[in-house]
Structure formats: structure tokens, C-alpha cells
Image 1: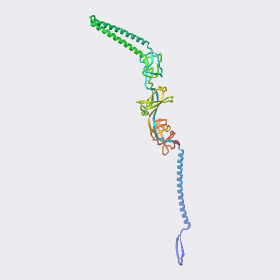
Image 2: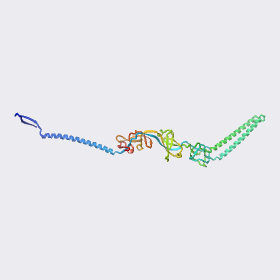
Image 3: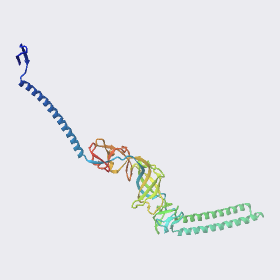
Image 4: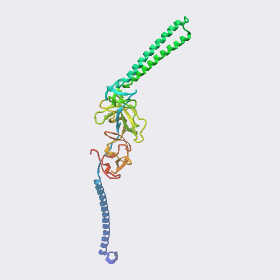
Length: 397
């Protein structure tokens, strides 16, 4: 609205002034509208900020709740350890060089067995005696035949000597001398034949004694007095040459590849807490295609506690290796092979395949798959699933 007013100046003249002026009611309305808009905007921004804060706090709280509900899992970082390699194997004890002893002659009835299992014998010692009453008479008869043949040879020689004395006088012809010489030679030959027959019978009689082919320990005695034996009776005794024993350790083909002749071993018989030192003297050149195992032969000195045929366990040294060493509880396996659970930076369990090596009293050597710096689940890995969030706790904290 425009208002027009007359104002008298100091000089008495009047002037006319026009003013643009809004009534007080209209101005206050506009101010209130602007203020309301600003306040509304401020309130809207405050509401948005409050909602953001609430949502962020809710997410953090939910994440905290989720973290607090995650299972607590003990983890370890094994690092790398220098381990003395060893192979644990089982097998049987046996004689290193076993000598079966049986009948080498015609056999007969056993009349004496002067040794028993567990006895030490020397080379050539009599183990059993077979009745030789008939053979003895035959030997005597043969000896008598030697005497008869020798007498005939002596007579033939005398006849030849006389003929040679008479041939110079012309009483005996040259043909008679030749005939007497042949007779003498035949008689001498018959003596040699008779003596050879006696020697044969004596050798046969000697073979009726069953003797030890070498010094050693008698492992088995399979004959008794009164038994009738022959060449087909099988071994009557078994002797460990020199008393030397061995263990036939059955080793997997992977472990067998790491063994060499000359490495040391400790052998513990079943039922005994005592261990015996030995040495691998032969590694089998072949692998059984059914069991995938080979034989490592461990030489052992004689000891009464080592009984051939018994079962034993061997710990064979196979050099040193540097690798992560994990407790058995940390290593799992299924149809896909061996594996461990590694906790990543987001505290989630990740399955990692590993290749296991030798097993020691301290744990299992891991040949590949991890380097030892990872956080590895120590226990309860069988209850985890890959990708599961956990609350890792280092061992001892």
C-alpha cells in the first residue's frame, strides 16, 4: 500500500512524500514462513543424521554381537622346525642267515640227539646219531675183502718174481711172464677197489651222524630219539649262523625310498620295554604290489630277549628335515586327503590341503601346503565348516 503525506518544511513550504510500506501483519507472516522452512530443513537433516548414526551403531552392534557369538578356537603358528627323520615300522624277528639241517645219507632210526633248541653249537658238532649196526658190519666185510685182495696181490707178485728169475734160464717163456704180470696188476687193482669200497662205506657211516654245518644257535629241533628219518624227512634242525638275527621291517614305499643301508635303528620286541640297537643292512629292491610295502632288513646281535618269529617295532633314522611340525589334533583327513584349517584375516576358517611327512613323538611333519606362519586351528577342526567365522585365540592366551 502507498501512503501519501504532506510535510511542512522549515521554510513553511509543504512537500509531498510517497512511501511504500507493508502493514506489520504481512511482514511477520513472511518471516514466520521462512523461519519454518529453515527449521524444517534443519530438523530433516538432523533426522537423517540421527538415522545414519542409529543404523551405523546397529550394524556395529550386530557385528559385535556376531563376533561375540562366534566359537572361540585355539590357533597356533608352528613356524619351521628341524626334525630328525625317522620311520616307524613293524615286522618279525628272524635268523639273518638260517641253516636248515637234515639227513644227508640213507637215514635210519635215530639213537641219540645230544643238543636241544637254544643250544650253541660249533661247526662239525654232532646234532643227532642214526643207528649204524648194519652199516658197521658191511664196513667190516669190506675191510676183510681188502685183506683178501691184498693177499691175492701178494701171491701174484711172488709168482711174477719167480717167473722173472726162471725166464733167464729158459724155463719160463716171455708169454708166461706177461700173463703173470697181468695177473699181478689185476690183483693190485682189486685191492684198490676193495679199499675204495671200504672208504665209501666209512663215508656213508659218517653221514649217519647229523652235524652242524657251521657254528651258531640251534633255533629248532624237530627230531626225537627212536624216530625213523630219511632224506625226505625235511629239516631236523634249524641253526642261526653265528647267532646273528635280524628284523624284517615292513616299510611303505615312500618311506622305503628314504632309507639306505647302514642307517641306525632301534628295535623293541612286543611285550618288552627294552630296545636293541641295530643297523639296516639291506633295503628290498622290490615293492609288494598288493600291500605297497617293501622290507628293510635290520641286523641285530644275539640276545636271549630277541626270539626269532616274534613281532617287533623298529624306529629307523632317515636323516633330518626342516618343516612345520603340527600336533596330530591339527591335521585332519578325508577322502580328498590330509588338510588343516587356516584362519584368514577376516577370522574365517579356510581349508588348506597339506602333504604329511614323518610322524614323531612331538607331532607330524608337514612337507607342503603351509609355511608355518599361518594361524592354524589346533583342535576341534572336525566341527568347523569352511568359511565359518571364529574367534581365534593363540595357544596359551
